[in-house]
Length: 415
Ligand code: NAD
Image (cartoon, rainbow, N blue to C red; front, side, top):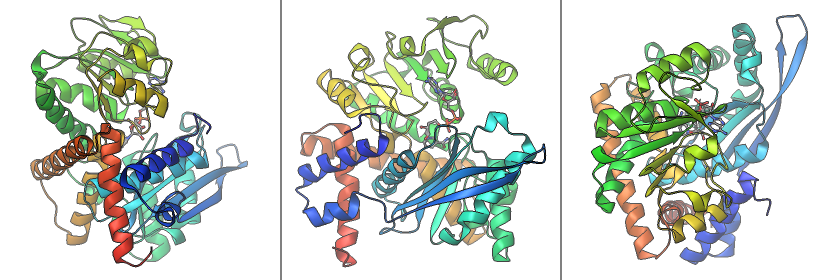
């Protein structure tokens, strides 16, 4: 296996789960590859008059439980294998949260930092022109992800609506509030992660108000997690990082000031009253909780042994390699696995779909209350399964999710 290939990592996790659940080979055969994967060439008229062609993907991994659901990432190092892995994890995530959706994912190889706003809009619309026949409100429903925003969702929704001749707010989620978005969706991923951290702390007998937290990644998920850790728990966030490095203050960071600094300079580095440290140092600090909120493969066999935190909350997708997982399990680090920890985003997206269908919108408080219920239930199902099968939390999550998908495939007569 190529240890840095996220799809091979996702497959390895599935095979391990198949052993725990004693699944037949034909069942595994249905689950080890996506049902459908589409690659498209996306032409864009650039501001200088040239036409540049970008490569895009949309993968539907499995839709036995309902329409596929999953974000669209704009990233210079996007690969089809990353998209396939993320689509697989979406399948398990939706099943785990018990929402009636399957798993999908999309992406475009591009660097948004090098595009003007006009180019970004044309890229978003052109991608939709290429994939619209493969998606739909009851087929496959995209959402924002790394480097895609509510504005990009609005352009894509508008393009899909034009192509299909009617307003189709339900084609994707994570939209701005005034065009079918849901209250509470913006910070739902971090909020959902907070509910799982709260339950994990209860399980481990930790007083969250006394905890120190370090956060890797200070984008959408990470920056909300920093604010919420303070607001909900009264915890002290001592370090955060982004792609340029980390910042540290043992007495706690002023998160508002860091957010302001990042807005002005595009990085957290040199925010007031902080010391610059490396990304690795952020992970290895003497803290109680680490929140991984950047990208894949952040925690490897090289640094896993140095993690001192009692809880590793994986807001990012695939931040821990399988070898690192074993080290963490052996060292007694309580890992809240990605497709449980970051499932708040897709759960709120599901709520957005429901509201679009009803054309009736909930308050943020209603969204959070429903989110709390779903996340808390899922956390305890995972904890129970991990104890019952004597496996780590990630495998517990797989056991719950894969069982649901397999039972649905059996009852529908797929296997
Ligand atoms: P984002 O683009 O807003 O933020 C990513 C952050 O990670 C940025 O601050 C970037 O500078 C930082 N980063 C990149 N490389 C880094 C490195 N080597 N070390 C430290 N920081 C680094 O993306 P996001 O939406 O916050 O997503 C982050 C992760 O959470 C991804 O894995 C994504 O798939 C996952 N996720 C996000 C959502 C959501 O709703 N936003 C939902 C589910 C999962």
